[in-house]
Image 1 (spheres, helix red, strand yellow):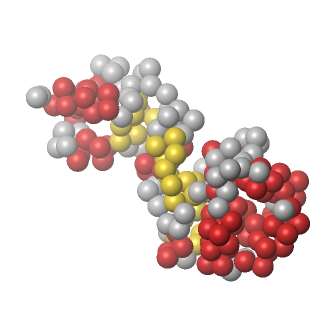
Image 2 (cartoon, rainbow, N blue to C red; image 1 turned 90 degrees about the horizontal axis):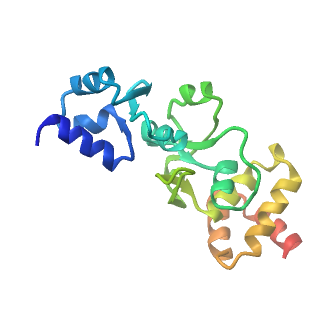
Length: 197
């Protein structure tokens, strides 16, 4: 298989989106990106990110592919997990302490930092709005994060999300309390549960 075929196959596999690192992993010379650009078979979205002209620009997927330590959280997770109908104004991500997230803040993302040992707690994969797999926090972790940040949130929004969770069949209160304990907000979570249950 020649490099053109390899690149076409890779683009097909990735739904028309490709990063420079993707072609490097399969040893396709970078010059083929330039060739495909000249032939209008690719468009450059941003540094190191390309897409076929008919492919959808999946912002969440691209953002996470370029920032592997950024996990979608808070309001973004609530929306993706169907715990709110409010479309987030700005996307929210959580990164481990020490991660330089200046470039993410410049893109007007809400960036939260946690201890490295808590960064992967509750991570799951779900599909973005365009069907690509992305990493987000599960319902229990997301609710803990929201409650930890409750002073910066609309109280009605917070209560509605909690009620929606508590009315769902998939709720896992023991897991919610376990995460709350690890995030040092167990008493806060218990207070909210007592009010809403």
